[in-house]
Length: 410
Image (tube, rainbow, N blue to C red; front, side, top):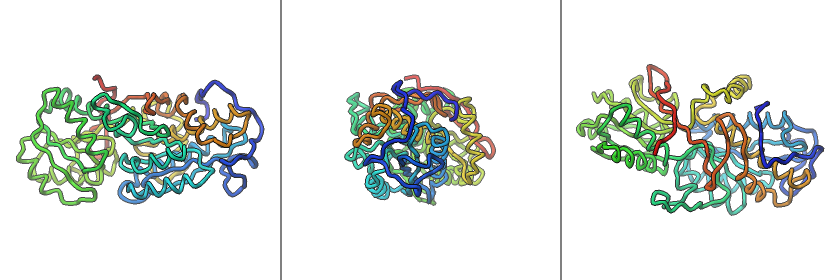
């Protein structure tokens, strides 16, 4: 954003064009609203740009595009022109890994925003880490990505130094949702459903742990498949279980139809889930039967934040055909975090990119701190966002309404 305070390492960048290095490229073909000469630095984007989750993926891509254009217009790093290289992973780990390899091969890429899905991130992390290429996800929430497989037992070990995220984790999101379901919505009997994917399984486990700790009872559990359309079997199990709420771990393409089919079958109980459900298409897919359904999502609603007013205005003015969706603000901040890390590296190297710019950007990212669209942007020792805010939304009619914003009280 044009007048935000951008604080990184307290160094100032030397003016003038930067010297071309092995990690940049020179040439007008790669310029985007930037200097007519100097070094081109590419910010990669990996997201589901097509397919069922494209509503979220396109919001990520467009928000990064906006950040890049504004970084160039503001000359945040004098002598450097930023551009984006967006690749479609279709929410598939195999595609994500291929995209990671392709981005690593492009020596002008000094940072990557994405992916959307935690399962896709698992396939990309080592590829990026081996190449010392920083990755900042605006949407991944599975705790193992930053804290290791044994995080729940307190044995937190950061698996990959190059991985960061601006979204908070399911270790907070799941319990936050459970507290709302039990304490605020007064639900005591839950039926758990997940899509067998990394994100969904982890989110359900986090919700379950807190819900039962509070005194709630799990009256049934089942699993569905991604791209599944007929949920009659699980609907029958839910109806006979006596549940007063369903908690779903997964994305909106399956959650919406599940909710609609459940209500149509006569079970007038809410479906609740995490940020993967938070999209207007969920309401459409439930065929108008989602009223009262609940979801949590990372951060406070962008539209309510003073820090996001300019982003919202600028995004609309830019004329993108798709909304910024659930992760737009976080995607913009992720891209700006990469810009700020590059700025710091340049400042520490007398106004030019060093030969080992990628590794230096990874180191600089851990020290990045600025006032972003979504609030304060900085990272802890695991690469996790220090911003732990979450919001509960409820479907009212044909749209999501804010029910509660806060942080998890453990």
